[in-house]
Length: 246
Image (tube, rainbow, N blue to C red; front, side, top):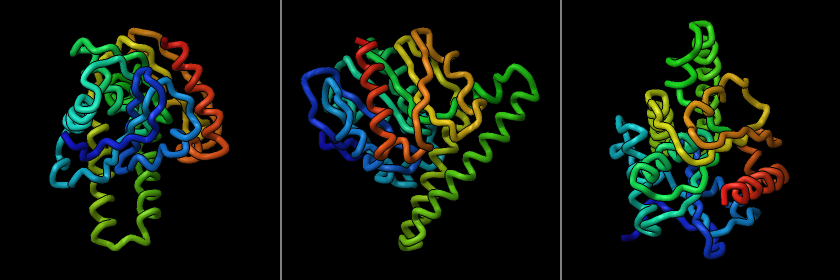
């Protein structure tokens, strides 16, 4: 099977492979610097989500998108162990992919999230109080609006036809996360976050993990954490997490 979305970023060693999901509407380019910097036990793969056609993904759920990505993961590595991770919205997709692999009896060594905001079903609908839920919604609305503004700015030089398609795709991906009610993981889960956003955007991840959960602060912001010089710190902490999962 020829991969349509999956892209190899680093050959690595003969250890467990790593599959990283980019942010909504993004590509594997997000992780090129990370892949060159990270000392991983096995090969590193990512996905080009911009290759998803709007007609293919519109109105689909996050679970549907995760299944498409899992199909290609299984084509190159039918059985575990695996490491899975994701950036921003991609972290939620990676979490669901990991839960599906665990349900199939596969060995997921660990899951890492990079500036991934807790699913709305956890931070909003299941909030401890109405005021907490309202605060969460306000913070997330602001973050999502900023995400779309940033996307528009990045696509400003692109022909309108293509820019509109990618903006629609990005908005659709974000929408799938707003209605996703996640499963619980058995493996280790670590959140790498910057100080850019309010703590409320990250509260609740621990409720999704029956294994160990931890939070690690890293420098930069949502995007610069993946680039020099901040990615050096991120990779050092990620390598420590991988070693702890062995």
